[in-house]
Each structure stands twice: as structure tokens, then as C-alpha cells.
Length: 462
Image (cartoon, rainbow, N blue to C red):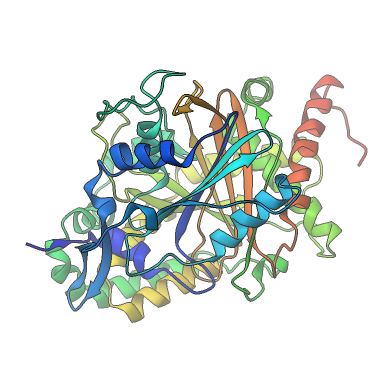
């Protein structure tokens, strides 16, 4: 019997665009040489233990189903690539950007591993997986299954039990988890359809009512103001990453100022975006833009590892026009507090969970509407606290880039690993030709906040 693709996974499959391939792209930098043969064995024994990765999605008259690859060859997916001289960080960023811009082969399972065997005395690994297979929380747990059973040990011949996931739930997990437990109606119906695709026909019969709800959400939020982040897309991606922030420092700053870690990270991002756009000629004085933020809907991290997508999206305000770090931080804090009681967040999650059951024309309308309400995607995932190893080689750096949907062309990811928070930026070159300039401002914005605390929070000279 053909396995149907769930409604929510189909939604992310349908969001593929030539300018926005719907892929999660990850990067591992290893402090030592990882050989192709070792990686190939790891993928064969641990990654392909998930049977789903031997299948590729196919759309059909009823929606979509998973099709087994008749002539699956692991060598089509685990590839070696060399960087041009001098084979440094800029060359690695260029490679990652090219891969993020290139759609996966639709006739094969939608994932690849690209191994740079020699990079700065070690190796680097770029992983691409289509979003229809899983969300970031599930993929983080898959990554942890790829890691060695014990730090520093070579991979065993057999499959090992996956370690418990430390993956977090996103930017605003605490209030949303509580809210979802007590919510009903649209959220419950949406998740029912997402998890029970056989009922998709019922949802399709309700398409007119759903379209009405989409229109209602469309008037709740004005479209985001025009900045260079709202230009037409070229389809060519650029990526960059910042030097990591010490998680304990971020936590301490938040504690001193009565804010959360996520308040500090979002405020830092908003400050960096504001300074970048100002430098590029945009007038951001008093301007607030929005980010669409993935929020985990999985019941808990202790449940058995399952692929698929179990998250919704909410809109988070980024006050890029506030220059003073403390004023901006408290504006973010207030916005996040208000969001906790916002019915808009729950309605949006319900609507997004239903997107995969809609006719394509309505799906296009919904994606266009949501794209107009935000200028970027922002995602945080809490990764492992202990260092990972692949084939005995330690992973020194871990980051990912979040995909963007519709006309949104900028994504920012924040991933914690080994006590540090790693910012990564992916952007269409038409919007941000050199995202390195943006990520370079992240540390500076965080430092300004720290300086204010050290000075007694009086004032800051720009």
C-alpha cells in the first residue's frame, strides 16, 4: 500500500519555489580529517536506518505519497567536493551558498551530504535535507544519531540507540506549550488533519471556510514595511556565520536585566539588522519589521524519534529602528509578553497546519499572504551541550540555515552547541549581497548591551 504524505509535510513540499528551494542546510566543521569511506558507512548504517530517506515525494491527484527509489545508490547522495584555493572560510561559505541555491534532484530521495575532506586542517560537511522529510527539531535528533555512541569512539558496525535529544522548542516554547495544552477548535482540527491525512477530503470540503480564515488573518497584521529585504528574489543564495556568543554570558545578561535568553538574542538580531540596513541606505528610524518564527508542536523531547513536521509559525516583532540596546531589549521583551496572550499566534498555527490539505490555488494565496507579513525567517534550536564526534573526529562547529517560503528571502538561525550560540544568515543576493556584513554586527550589538550593564545602564554613544 502506498504511504501517503501527511498534510503538513505536503504543505512544505508545495512551498518549493525556483527562488526558494525548501531545504534545511546544515554545516559541521570537524577538528580532524573525516574520510569519505567513513562518512559513507555512517550514512549507510545510521542515516538510512530511517527508511524514509530511501523514498522521495511524489504529488498525485489525492495529494502526495512516498515513492521508494527503485535504484537507490548511496553514492548519488554522499559526495566529495574540494574547495578552490585558499580553501578558507570564504570558499566554504560560497560552496554552502551554491548548494543552498540548487534544488535537489526530484527523481531521487531529497537529501545530500557534501564532504570537504580538507578544510583548515580538518574537514567540513554540508548536509541538505528537504523540509518535507522533517523539521529542525527532528533533524537535530537525526544528527545526534549519526554521532558516535561515545565521544571519541569510531562508529560501530551495528546501529546504536540514539542519544536523548537536547533539542529545544524554538523562540517561545514555554507559553506556547501551555497554551496548546488548553487550546481546541482550529488548532486541534488543524493538527488532526496534519496527522491523519486520510481525512484530508473533509478539510478540502471546508476549503471555502479556511480561505475565509486566511483572509481574516490577512487583515489582522499589516504588510511589513518596505526595506531592501522586501525586494524581488534572484534565486541565488549567500550564507555566512558569526563568531559564536557564549551562552552563559547571554544568560547572565538576561538575568541581570530581567529578560530571557531569547529576548536577548532577538534584540541582538534586531540591532544588527537595523545597523546593517541603515548602512545600506534604508531609513529605519522607528521601523519595526517581523520575523516568522517556527514553534515546536511536539509534545516532549522524550518521545520516540519520528520524522515529519510538527511545528507552526508565529510573527515576532523586530524593532530595528530602536538604536539604544536597553530600549530595544525591553521593547522586544514587551512584545514577547504580549505575544503570549495573542490569539493571532494560535490561529496562525492552525491555519498553517491546514495548508497541506488545501487546493494548490489556495495554498499559493496563503503562502503569499504570510510572506507579505514578514521580512525574514528566524529560528532557534538548542543543540547538544556535549561535543559530537563523527568516526572519532570531534565536531568543533555546528550550524544550520533555515529555508524561506514565498517571497521571503532572508533567514537567520540561532543554534546552541557546547555552551555557545551560533548565528547563521542565509539571504538572496538581491537582498543581502554579503551576509558576512550582517553577521559581523551581531557580536558588536551584544557587546553594546554588555557595556551598558558594566557602565550602570546609563547611556550609550553610537
